[in-house]
Image (cartoon, rainbow, N blue to C red; front, side, top):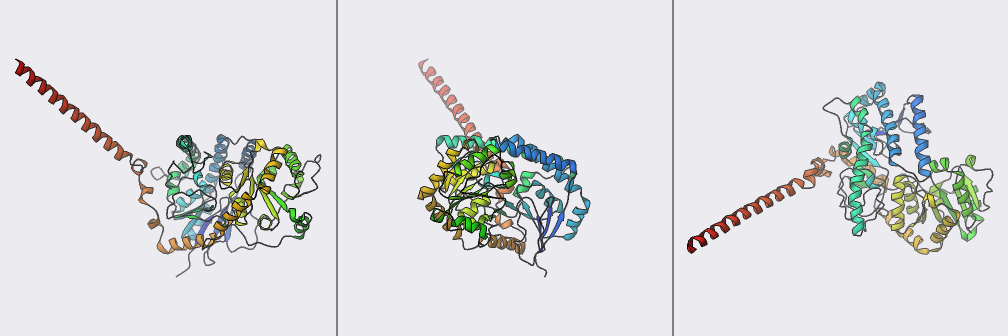
Length: 489
């Protein structure tokens, strides 16, 4: 019998080398990939040049707004509309669709933030598993979520809510539901164009059809909450073995001796769109540290009128995982991306989080609550405040202790994230799916799942019983009054 074969649909993060070598892997991407030696096939496709320009324009706008502290939901919806148009272009490519159907894959991997991959899996009629690269609440796939201690996405609450926190969380659920509906609706035209009437999928239902959900997080970072058997933590999936640092980094770190160094990496998008004013403030903050600073910052974007601090080294690219593993690292200044946080936790490094996009704000809340570090909002990004926050985390040993404790939790799993992903994938391939891992609740209408029909029935029974009792008491009262009048007469 031939080994299992799997199809990977590359969204933003899907790692394409995690299944056994016996698997045949194919990725579909509209991105330009740096092709090295691979054991999988890549199908590249391109949309019209005008659409690429529109997409870049919207993306530039969203990033610029976010970096000015205006992460508006409407901007994100417009960007999703562009992705819906791009998805229609892919589904129209009969050559790609026929090729995929002819491959007869056993399983499709989708990335939860790429809605097109769900529609493509549905079009192929194949079972699929989903990778969630962001916090839990960013996707609703049927997990039990008691509002008393499970924060709604973007509420910025923790699992320990007071009365007003629970009120806010309850109200935020309606806000989150409306915003999700608006995001899903951006793919309505794509669904109408490519699926016949009567069998058109609903995106929210498709998410609940996933055989497995692999979540890019860990118990060391997430709040404890109910999980379903088909939900598996794989935080740290992209982690690689630590390698020796290139000499240029080792020589720089050695200059600062036991003072150590600070690593600053706010993500490639931030370093591309960062304003000169924020660069000036950060550079000024770093001059106030006794540590060296290794900063991922595009040298082409460095303002010519700013003198780089003597204790700072800027580089276009850095080996982040290897630097985080270095014994002399004292602090990690991060934008709060989950992969960066997982790497920091892996090596027990405390953090200062400067969130830019929506899910990063949620991540930074957890950094603070878990005592892994502190946060700083973009509008507070002034030299004095940033220097104060960095010194606070470096000098207060409680942050380092909490980071080391989280690292122990993270490392103590009996299986690595890759082993968990491969093992569970192999399990559902051998058993013909994950029906035994999914509760029937995922197939129930919402009013049944939350027992609203039962409550309504019991309320009706109670009202009828009260009405009947009232009628009986009224009849009895009239009869007693009538009997008394007869006796008096």
